[in-house]
Image 1 (cartoon, rainbow, N blue to C red):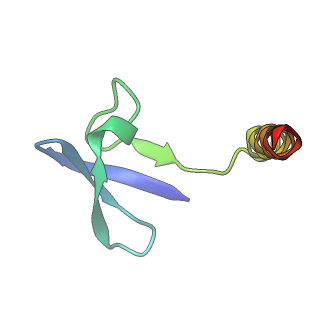
Image 2: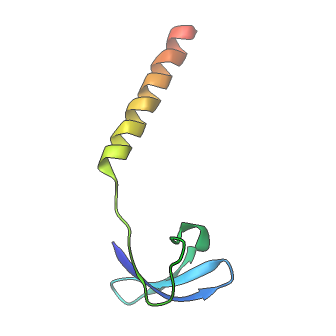
Length: 67
């Protein structure tokens, strides 16, 4: 998904989505140094997602072994 920063309002960036709709995006999610007019790509990091799932699965297995 690609969004364009329209403006900043307080702790939010107002971003324009592909369909022209604008939504508030928490400023903490905006890359440092981003400014009005910048394009931000939002995507799934499949490798990191898989790593995280495996880590959680291992933690759950360890938890069940201890009980």
